[in-house]
Image (tube, rainbow, N blue to C red):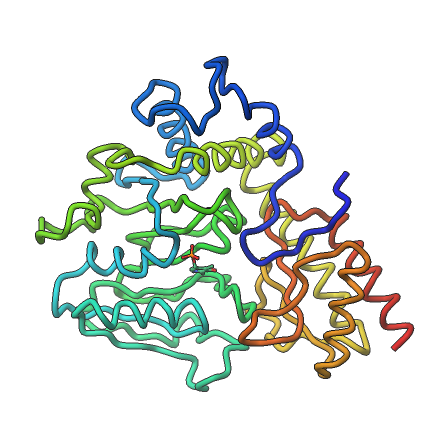
Length: 359
Ligand SMILES: *Cc1c(COP(=O)(O)O)cnc(C)c1O
């Protein structure tokens, strides 16, 4: 049993069984007599590990051979740059939706990529407590793509239905990949770092439609998806340990949880009991409108900075960590990534009840 309930927004909690396996393998990976960190990235066990990991992503995301799947470094942040460079050309129209913190970081980076950027919003600048409706965005006729963040980690919103637009989508799913099915029929590219929901920091998965890759534009090789595709995610030394832990997470999701449908059901249940507790409370409230609430990051507050701080301290004393809101927002934010259990959430709800009684 865990002794601390970890609601960290990222890097997120890992399942106990994954950590136990890491401990077991630490000094000798698959009978090689050396740890996974010390093996050549060209050796057979590591090449197999990389291929098995991309295959597992492919299977869990139900990607056919129209897609390429690669594992990269540089986090979600590098994809803010690599996606526009690979999926559009200088001067092209590219459309973005501003839904708060991380989407803004993506918009800031593309602003330096010499593209013609248009930004959509929900029409209420500064208020990110709800998303534009699925039919509210009309992409420009020749837009290469529309970029969205599927789950807004900081403000606690999530697209439960992707926007219906003419342009293909590029999605940053860093904080909800493998938490649910995301329909990919109008998606050209999906990227997500692993450290929130699907593995360890240091590895980022990119799935890109072959048909969306443009002819060679003379990009630096390291920034060109094709270098990594051609070399099967082994173009340069990959982050082997991160890939290894991510591989364990994918196996855990498949064998311990029972696959993506089961994970999705569980995540719905997990977030539902917490939102119910907040909505039924006289002390706590959630600013996000019901239909756009995130199943991954639950944002709430008491309306008083002092009381919020007291509640966060109270959680810490009771072995609950990662409850404080993002530094830009204050209040509370509880992240319910895949590895967070119903028991963890029940412990939090119990603390909310007790705290409320004394306030
Ligand atoms: C955390 C986060 C990022 C940033 O990822 P890094 O790996 O730190 O670069 C990007 N997008 C979203 C949606 C995030 O939640």
